[in-house]
Picture 1 (tube, rainbow, N blue to C red):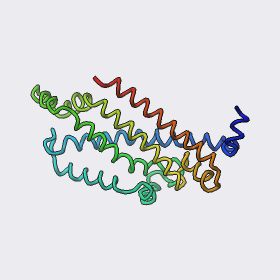
Picture 2: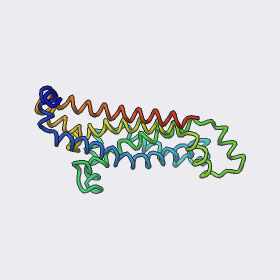
Picture 3: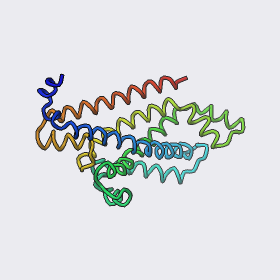
Picture 4: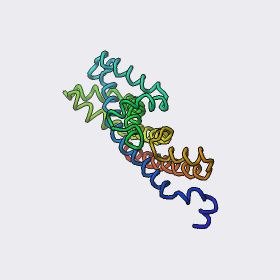
Length: 226
């Protein structure tokens, strides 16, 4: 097996410590940014849902502002957002390179996407359930946690799965400006030094990560469907 790998992946085998470090950096970016994105995106998605027209806390001023902010960040290509946020990233993280430097742009690039996914998932709920809860005297907070979020868990799981997969592709793109991870590894060795086995190995690992997330998301979503 060792001889086979050295024959077909000579450049990868000679850089195994760098390869493992790149995988670790990609996982760190996904986990650290993913936790913040989940919290911010879920919060914005809920606010968009309850403040829109005919929402349980209708407030069109708040809805319009949030709606425009989300659209603004979603309309900016991620590679431009990476460069544009460098001053803010340095201010918050103290650096604009490496894993720490990638967290801030990943949050700005993905949280708006996730908030739209959350809004879409919550919109699929039967409005009759909210009316029934209101008729029984439930307040807005009670409706959000006991009706909206509880009844829409399968949709929220699917939204989280899609966002996590999107986040992995953005971590690879962040490697183009020195964020580390598999994207940086593939660019530095696979592209700039024409070591194609490095590129293929990086792609295989990314595909495996996406496949695992998709499988876990499908299983959890199926378990939560009732």
